[in-house]
Every structure is written in C-alpha cells, then in structure tokens.
Figure 1 (spheres, rainbow, N blue to C red):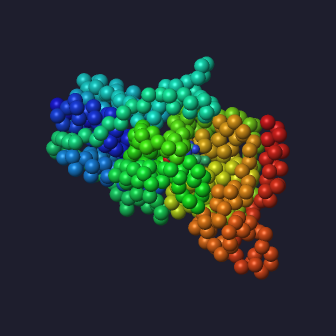
Figure 2: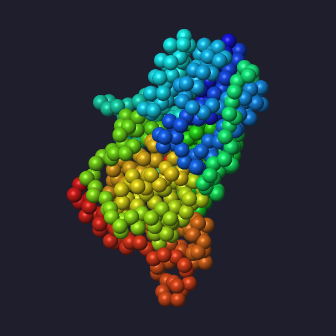
Figure 3: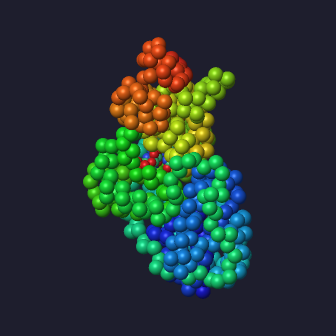
Amino acid sequence: TVSVVLFTSDLRLHDHPALRAAVEAADEVVPLFVRDPAVDRAGFASPNRLAFLADCLTDLDSGLRERGGRLVVRGGDTVTEVCGVARRTGADEVHMAVGHSAFAHTREARLRRALAADGRRLRTHDAVTTVVPPGDIVPQGSDHYAVFTPYFRRWSGEPLRTPLAAPRKVRVPNGLRSEGPPTRASVPGVSEGLATGGETVGRRRLGAWLSRHADAYGTGHDDLGGDATSRLSPYLHFGAVSATEAVHRARSRGGQGAEAFVRQLCWRDFHHQVLAARPETATEDYRSRADHWRRGEEAEADLRAWREGRTGYPVVDAAMRQLAHEGWMHNRGRLLAASFLTKTLYIDWREGARHFLDLLVDGDIANNQLNWQWAAGTGTDTRPHRVLNPVLQGKRYDPDGAYVRRWVPELAELPGARIHEPWRLKGQDRAAYDYPEPVVDLADGLARFRHARGRD
Ligand code: FAD
C-alpha cells in the first residue's frame, strides 16, 4: 500500500503526526511538497521567506534521504498535483495537518472532494502550527480570548501532546518525477544576514539555546544588545521546529527563563486564535479608534525615513537596519519601531505591517498584523494609549549603546548612553557625525497623537 503525506507549514520529520500516521499505515510513503502559485499570490512570497523555505525543503529532503526516502517537490495547483501523485502511485490515502486559515480550509475542502471523486481519502491530523489549536479554548460567551493573561492561564492548564519521534525509515515508491527542492541561491534580493533555515539548524538552535541561554532569558529578553532571545521564530513559522516540542522541552528544563520563554510561545497561539475568530483583522482594526492617520507628502517622507532607518532616533534606526540586514528584528526593536511609526509619527499601522511582511523571515499574518495592532493601540493591548519613548527605551534596553553601535556605525564613537541623543551635541561635534536630525520632535509627536486619540 502507498500513502501520500502533504507537507505545508510543517517542514520537519520530528513531531509530525501526519507523517507518523502515513508511515504506520502504508508500506510506502510519498512525502510531497507542492510549490503552489496560489500561496505566493496570497502574500507569502518574499525573497527572505522563499530563501528560508528553500533551506527547509533541502534539509527535509536530506533528512528523508538519510531514512531511505526523499522529498518529492512539484510545482502547480496543490489539488491537481496531489491527485496526480496519488493516481500515479495508487495511493489510497493522503495525510496532512489541518490548517486554520481561510486559505487552508478551502484547499482542504477542495482536496477532500477531488480525492473522494477518485475513490481516495484525505486524512487530516492534529494542527501543528500552534500548541493549542485556535478555538479549542474560549471564554464563556465568546469565540476567542481578547485579553492575553486569562488566555495564558487557561492555555497553561491544557494537556500537552507528547512530541513524536521522527520515523526511522521512510520508503518512497520509485519512478516519481520531482523538481527537487529549490535552492537559496536561486532567490534574488535576499537579506545578507539571513539565518539558515531547516529542521537540523532549528533543532540544534533550540537545544543549544535551552541549555546555554534559557536561564538568562527571564531578565535578558528585552536587552537589545545582549541578543538573548532564541531566534526560533522563523523555524516555528515554517514548522521546522514544533512549537509543542519547544514547550515540552522548555518545561522539562524548568526555571524562570524557560517559563518566560513558554509564555512568549503562548503569545503566538494567542494571536492565532484572535485571527482565526476575526480574520478581517488582518487588514481592519480589531478595535476601531476612529484614527485619522497622517497622509500626504510629509507623512510619505517620514514613512520613507522610517523604512530606511534614518529617522534620527538611533534605536529606531538600528532596529530598522537590523530588519533590512537580517530579515529579522529583536522583539523590543519591533515594539519600538511600531510604536514610533504609529504613535509618534501617527502613520497607519498597515503601512508598517506591510514593510515588515516584505522583509521578515518569520512574517506571518497572525503575529505580524496583530502585534502591529497591539503596538498601534487598535488591537488587544489593554493600555492602547501608551507611547514608547525611543530615547528612554534606548537608555533602558540598550544602556551602553551596543545595539545602536552595531547597526548605526556612523554613531559608534559616541560613548555610552549618549549615543541615544546625538542631537544634544553642539556645533562641530554634531557636524562630525553624518547622521540625520530627528524627523519629529517627540513632544510634538506625542501632542499630535493625544489630540488625535482625544477623538476616541
Ligand atoms: P523569543 O523571545 O525567543 O520567543 C520565543 C518564541 O515566542 C518566538 O520565536 C515566537 O514564536 C514567540 N513570540 C515571542 N514574542 C511574541 C509575540 N509578541 N507575539 C507572538 N509570538 C511571540 N512574530 C512572528 O513570529 N512573526 C511576525 O510576523 C511577527 N511580527 C511582529 C511585529 C511586531 C510589530 C511586533 C511587536 C512583534 C512581532 N512578532 C512576530 C513577535 C516577536 O517580535 C517575534 O516572535 C520575536 O521577536 C521572535 O524572536 P525570537 O524567536 O528570538 O523570540
């Protein structure tokens, strides 16, 4: 007997319920990935994510080869390709993880119908994107949690699935055509410092980070220069690392840092459950504040300066330049950059979210759009009017200026925390630094925001 396993956003061999079920149910398995242009059209395709995807597929292929198999890659419409492969191999079952987006629901329904018409069956397995599937836990009288803390309390009490080991052997039928995995080198326009993708690197990172850095995470995760976070987000996004396994391993390790890390993983699930219940919040305000975002030429120029990392606020510029260089940004940097754009420059969060999605290797609709809304005060933040002051934040989270010095080298010579306020230098001292003046006075920005939100 033959089964097909369709990989989507679960590009791994460990803790993969669909793969496990297929291997157990059939003598031969076709591990299949379809490069579907519809996914690209739905906004997935950006150079950084395509390059990381290529790494993930190459690594998945090698892992399967070590187990006697290989990855079959096809380009085209998912339903057509899966049905074609099933027919060609005589597979009677196709296994895949359930998805939660509207796109995934439609794809699944189409596939189920097409396979049934051929006398075959689609078997769906645990969703593997989140730890707790969206909609599984809800408060009384609502279809989702709007506040994080009660969600976290409930989420923490949920039973955790035991992560599955990777299969030892995968036998793939002979004679199947495959394009082979794409290569990173074939993707133009990739950020120079982009991390290497794939399950092997992701698992190594998880293990090394938990054993060496987790203890410092509780106190150090906001330290911009210390760079103490796990950097697992892209691996989780592509499913190269299982979120369930990450929680499992962090809990077994224990300690405050590991617990704080688990709490952050819960934020991921939190945003996913909000988006699943309110899909329109990908583009619309979760809570409308009747904002009249700035538009026009001046706002355009400010937006450009923000994108290019030359707002004149060193910590904001450092964060934006890290994004351009690595396709990734520290969470504190994301918060600062987003607060600055939406509350100090008073520019629509959608503009910022779009730019982030163009570059972020971990960029996804749930976490990006809803974190942006959180930062803009249109989302689930229970203190929507708080504004992060980039100077105070810089001094607090980058006290010796290491982060700014790394990303804004033209200011590197400014000692200590003085790096956060280059405009305080006078005359020739100031002229020695080729760095822009602030695009806005913080007090003016704040006044504008307060005035605008006063209409709430
Ligand atoms: P760690 O601190 O090591 O945390 C571990 C994991 O927890 C992360 O890998 C991530 O999966 C999850 N996590 C941590 N913080 C958050 C959070 N606030 N929301 C959701 N999950 C979280 N994260 C994305 O995965 N994709 C995005 O597109 C994205 N866009 C963002 C946009 C803005 C404006 C902001 C403020 C945050 C955004 N985040 C996004 C959340 C967060 O910044 C990143 O997940 C985190 O920086 C990834 O780094 P890390 O893996 O080292 O995190």
